[in-house]
Amino acid sequence: MGRLHTMATQVYFFFLECYHLLLHPILTKYLGIDPWDGTFGRKYVPFSMYEELLDRAPYATWREWCEVAGKDEAELGEEKEEEGTGEKKEGELKGRKGPNVFWQCWWKEEGEPSVDVVVVHGLNDYGGRFSDLAPRLIDQGIRVSAVDLPGFGRSDGVHGHIGDVGDLVGAVGRIVGRLGFLQKRGRLARSKSGRVFLLGSSLGGHVVTRYAIERGGVDGICLLSPLTSVGHTATPGGSVLLRVAQGLRKLLPTFPIVRGKRGQGARYLALMKLLEEDSLYYNGRMRIATGLAIKESVEAFCGRWGEIRVALSVDHGDADEIVRVEGSRDLVAQSRSTDKRFCVHSGGDHSLLRGWSKGPLILDGVARWIRERCT
Image 1 (cartoon, rainbow, N blue to C red):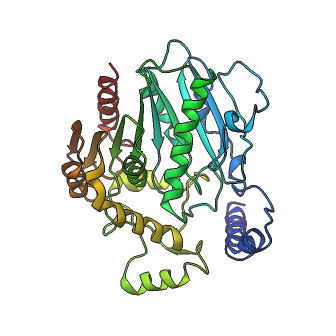
Image 2 (cartoon, helix red, strand yellow; image 1 turned 90 degrees about the horizontal axis):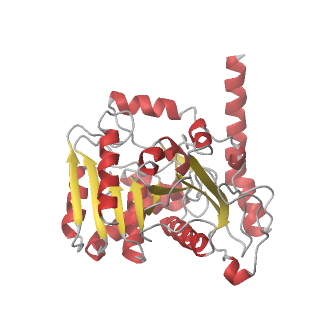
């Protein structure tokens, strides 16, 4: 029975890939038809037990899908009032046509949050997976928002596909703006400090860095093993393969071409084994457009680190096999922030917060650094 289930799953994903590569581009690009929901069924995946735990006291939750290119009620007119007390909302913003991004916000029911932190996940991941770590911040008075970047988790897009990293930056900006709007309208309580920090890991660290350079408007950024170079990361590698990918980019942008590079440590391998069972985590090969988009963005912005002026916190492990710690050291050195912190963790690999005894201490250090800037 187990073997039959495995075969059925493989057949399903084979036909799904064929749909992504052949039928869906024709329907959407040339015929203007959206045959089914933009998440390709991911929006119906049940919430994890950690996400559900945050739905109950002493915590409260807000979650919704909103359009990246949409507008809030102030511009579009009042949206239909949602039922309930405002402690838990699920809805969808109606605005201009565009991809929907899913995000969740968690906080303590009692008392006012001191500050807002928006979490931006890494490649292949999704924001909801931070729900098991969020209580460590929430219990310290921090309100945590986690976004599923386009193409990941419960947000619209072919799973694992990035056409332009700028779209990810735009999604983060949409959520930051939405968070402020909900506070202004009284649907979420205002934080005591009124400050907003971004927390990004791996690719999310690059997105957060690019956000600070291009947009600013936040009070600080916290980076965990940020993606600072592509020479040691999982992008289409090798000159021949790179040329093949560039040649096929317009024709087959979502074609899965190469396996992403992964660490070889026992702890990291055990973590990846668990993620193979998570349907919201992208476990497939890196798609052509994804690898090239990441490569282009990282190379374009590594020369602009001197434009970072907001408060900056960076944590990196010296045993990271995915992204070298020297990149983070250069980023901190080149930034023009007058308030910056850089911590190198001995023995830490690419995933600093999970499956490692020092993980909770690292997160506590980040939380302490944020709270010190809100007093």
